[in-house]
Length: 457
Figure 1: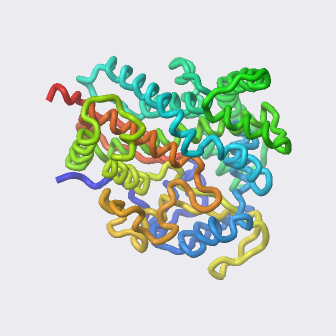
Figure 2: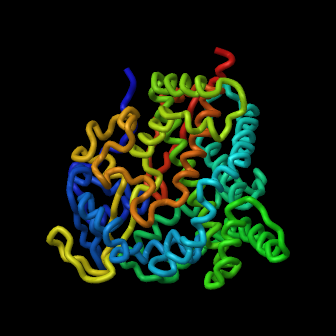
Figure 3: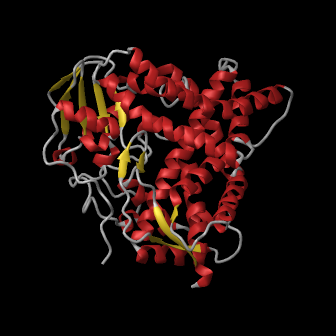
């Protein structure tokens, strides 16, 4: 009998504030308790403000769809991510955000996604070559491979060039460190710890990690920006941004400001996809019958030829598997908001400095929204999203829904189809992943699987 997907068992009761400080500094998931998965709204008194956890779908809809301008992203999010993302669409609000989004949207129109499919395919072929060089008689940590291929894909799609493997690993290692250090800084800010010498010293290493990442991307953006001014054109996302700016004189973005958006697209685009794909492979390894069903569908669509863009539309069951994986392990486990003014929510007064948390991790595992919420059931999605409105939000919702959603779905189908057609996946004997919540939800101890070539079966 197959096991249930791993799920960090929550504490029975909420931890005292001093214990919560240390729990959250490792992983925000450690501070959750049993009632977190059932309550409509929770409240925590912090030293200088309050934190509200909102699971009520009516209130979530109000914040994300009906009145999004009244509930902007929390200032602390921008402060934590500013060294890395600058003033990017991921952290900005209001007119600044709208102007940035208008710059980015043309690059993610369906016809542009079609154009970059060949580059996506080339990156996946590079992944296949790397796997062939591994010693597959031993279990493999598949997480770094998913991170590398998604980084390569988004780099090629944005800037029409591949990132060298050594440089990619340096950039990804720096981002891993940035992720590791950021929760501690976030908790210090939320608990009102003064920005003293020790805190600044700790933060300097995190800023140094951000500079490693930005340098790798800014040098390409700078070359492309100057080449564009000289008349050079390419079919990629960066070119679409530059053409949009050229056609709209009011969009006077500097090279640095455009770099902010590119860094955001690169990191958000590869990190969330890598996390989602890693958890999907875990679930497929845990459920061999579901893996075989997905494999048979892939073989019916295309058993041996190179995959095409048209093939991606034929993977209906594989898409269901991926959507269920996104439900159980949403890459971004929470969204941080604040109220633009004093307000009341479910009879609780909320001040502008308070944090309002909308957590897909909780909403998508709430028994009031989903039948058997902790079980892996891909068939839930055979007719699309079956949940109440607002109960499935791995890509966000409303005007701030992820602009790369279609890109991410196509990328996932290609990577999963390529892997499952060539290999069968099993978990390493005795291995169980340990989910942790940082900027994204990852497995703290990697994702160790046996990668078994199918042609040897």
